[in-house]
Length: 420
Image (cartoon, rainbow, N blue to C red; front, side):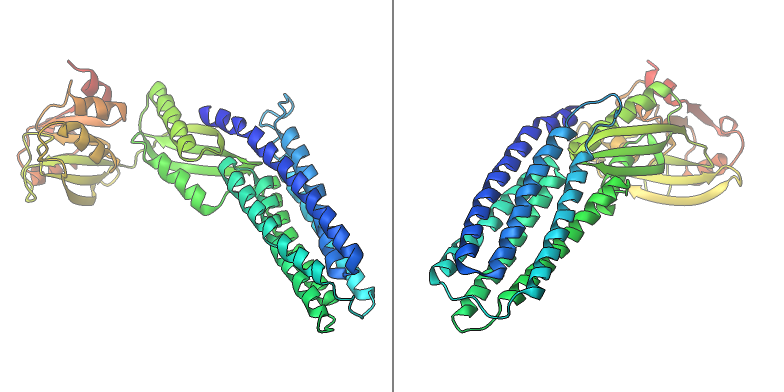
């Protein structure tokens, strides 16, 4: 919720930059119309038409931003996609501009317009301005997550190429080379390329295409960091304007609905913290259907002797038991990086083990009423106290049907955390 409000607070800055864009484009348009009128350059005329489209696009951008922020009961997810509609409108205006330029170049007289030295200097002075302003727009657009502002900024930076072509065409006039129509045609191709890119990006959002794989993997990794989550059944993320909507169906190892809900809220907060453009995270809770159990067993040494103390255990064995076949499907021994800490090792070791997604922690020491016991209980991980002396003997008992008969005392996650 905080991140959504933060994004809404950024909207005035987006609109303000869009207004700057409108004023900037109007200034450029006036200068290019004046220069094209006195030089008769088709390339300058094409560039002026391109800037006219920029003016209309800036106006559409401001309108789209204003409409997208309106709240409506008929549109509970917001009108954010209006921004993408504005981007698509920009793309069609670009296509129309390109058509007009190509048509004019095809029917224009082949002679080169007379050389005007002052016009060349004026165009040279204009060249860097769109790039600088476009870079500013893109930076603000990325900070606020506004696709329309980014599209407008990219378009401004592309103006550098068109203005450079105009400069070359005017410079060629001094040698009598008729490059004016060629420059105009190249400008038209640049306009088509930019329009196509903006159109594709806007249509992907309107058609609810998924976000890029990098963002999706980022969300997936943030979800799997939660120790309560055993797996992800489905993960969908889509853009709507400058906002992102996430839907996830998660397998929770906790059966307590309250704990699952708290874990979901924590996951949502973490996603919004790392990705401020996320407006809403919808989580569907699915209880895990266990086909196997993963045990984390405290060891005194790598040979398999069980440890008397949880936090001081130099090693932990990770053992996966297939519940159907009653045999070991995976076994691994990991070193405890916190065994030599003077204090606070228990909770650090707990967090270390939770990253391996265990179902049951086994130790000769009781964890009931202790910090690690509470940590495991909150994560939905059970704890068990055993009298076994070796890993080999314990594994044989784990593969049996009745662990309590094999010298193990199994405590549920809630009992382990709440026992005093």
